[in-house]
Length: 207
Image: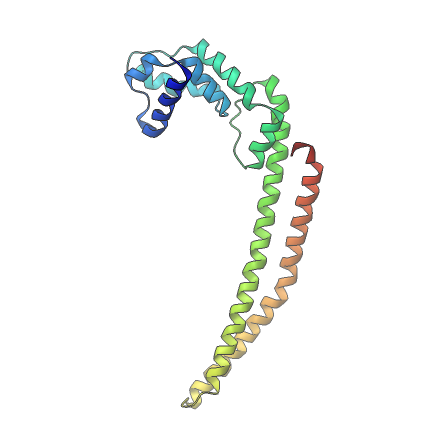
């Protein structure tokens, strides 16, 4: 089977999802190519167990040696230092698919990339907290303006004015608290940004 035909078969498998491999696919499978695709996509060699189970229903046994040969070739493409860093930086999980001799280059770089990903997430979270606090402050300020305008409107009863005055004071207290909390949130965002910048500079040779 040519690579293009097998690629079409792989696409069919992805589209069928949980349906798995049918008898025709099991009989015509190029197990070396399947192994290569799995290895190149970071799937562990144990993925063949799924194919074995699916094809057993059709009386077909996968060619283990061919699969392993393909998986090794695919892993040599996946398990590189540069790709390890990129996989980690995307926040993708590592499925322990690399053999020890390949993992020696891949894993440290993956951990570096994952550390940078975690720092980026922390920075995003800190910045979001600052933005959220600014939105809260703006909303409280607007509520105070609206209630103050209502307070001087005609036709209000004494009780309604008393309630509005109380609401305004409560809003002002909440606004003061929100403003007082802002510097700490901004400082957290600054520290998160500095941590990310330092890590990025340290790992510049990966980029």
